[in-house]
Length: 480
Image (cartoon, rainbow, N blue to C red):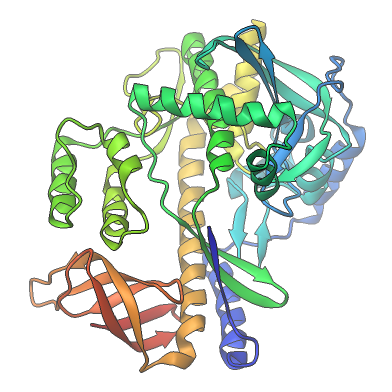
């Protein structure tokens, strides 16, 4: 279900102008720019023109891409088929390393950026678009080089064998998530897509069995549609989770390869501490959503009704269980504590090299380890630096996202100061040390999350009055 709230172009002409200025200021404050220097663009164009395809030809495999509507930086293409009682899953990942010269201008700029950033007034790509939206992107009908992962799965979708090698591929079709969901729902999807559902459901069950957990909080996104900014809150379609399971499976395989080889970089997150779990248990009990002592927290999160105000507050509180994510690099002795707690297994980022720096290094490392060849020296030298680079990039991405959403919300409400709204309290701050009690609320219409002044109770539905909405700072304040 997708809910859109459009900023009316007539009613909010002045706020829209102020919003555009605020969005520019956010970029300036974070020192991010979509443009690249002339030497970076020149090197990217040269490598794109000179690149050759791998000798292995897998272009006969009917790969397809599944991405958000309108995406042009296509990292992955997938194909599934039956294999006896089990399955064969082929997953092609864009061959970005072919287009990035180690220690060259594009490499240096990618290390500075860390990842593609998504802002309401435009994307800030990790690589020049001649690479990310052209030569390396797995575009429909185009012959491309890729790292092709091939997995043999048993009837329960457990991985029994893994291979990885560079090959040339050709995507047959670029699907959006909504298109694939519609095809699967009405039964007209090709066999490969129907198997995506079958395998995805079984991989979700395996995730349950190993104790994995997913927050699955509705996304709050900003889009630019028909000359207006749009705030969207949406829950993922089932196909997005099935597709994500293929990516998770690949990341787990990459982690296993690197751990066995004694070199690599993993995405890690510690398990929630006992005190954190107990605090969460008390919170949800107070909300009227008790968590049974014998139920794993991943299963509890799956059981929460996100349409219930108390459930929404419980999901918001569950964010405390998903903290401390980072990257752990190693070369030689494999350190302890390599599990990504939400995945409930060692895991690596490896399926989005067009949009995330670390994936390029993981792919090269895994390719070398699978082939039994030395990991390139430029990769070994870079590994210890990547956790800090990615942490800094994650911080910038988080700041850009939050500040942009705050600005959009303020623009939505700027003309409505003094009005009252229906809202749900999703967290509470009871005051202390002289501070006044307050909380965080979610409005039901428009879809806005904001601060509320006054004594409130988590999980309750209340009426609030809009006290202020400042586009220049993104600050929105309600009073209970």
